[in-house]
Length: 170
Ligand SMILES: CC(C)(COP(=O)(O)OP(=O)(O)OC[C@H]1O[C@@H](n2cnc3c(N)ncnc32)[C@H](O)[C@@H]1OP(=O)(O)O)[C@@H](O)C(=O)NCCC(=O)NCCS
Image (cartoon, rainbow, N blue to C red):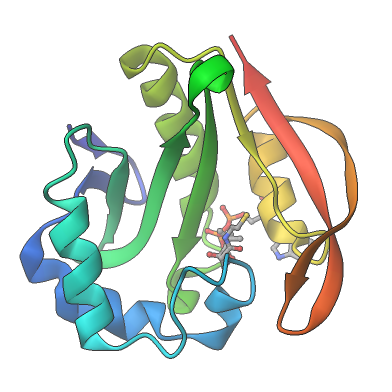
């Protein structure tokens, strides 16, 4: 799979992405918007571990966002199970130096279309924290619909936060 877009390319992760991945992922501003599962600080060993998993997934669901020829972020889905097997949760991040260039707006829209075409999904959703208007905006631009505010849904960095539920359905 390779989605060659105007501002970036979405492609499978490679083991040699480790250095660039660790450099860009080691950013508190990125970490603040993601689950605690995403390490911080983000060391080169974290990158190696992640890439080992991402390159051996039975069903590839995590992809690299490449900008200017190097790994600059990640985009992926977590497939639902059981009665939620037709749904997936969406996650993504981009290196801070590339923010506000329209990269993620382009990537999220194209990747959502790819996922609906490639997996038997009827619903893709995301839950940006309520203090992340940029992510909410990216989702809105990609056709995701705001379904509600999940009060006190998250504790991040010691702070109790609401999250915003956005979904696209097919
Ligand atoms: C959120 C994130 C993915 C946005 O990526 P990006 O490539 O900078 O986004 P884009 O440039 O495509 O678009 C951002 C949109 O949000 C808007 N925006 C950016 N910062 C904003 C802010 N603080 N408040 C309101 N809107 C904001 C931009 O104006 C733009 O909208 P527009 O095209 O209507 O002007 C990126 O900042 C990031 O990786 N953050 C850390 C990780 C993260 O938040 N992941 C998502 C978890 S749900």
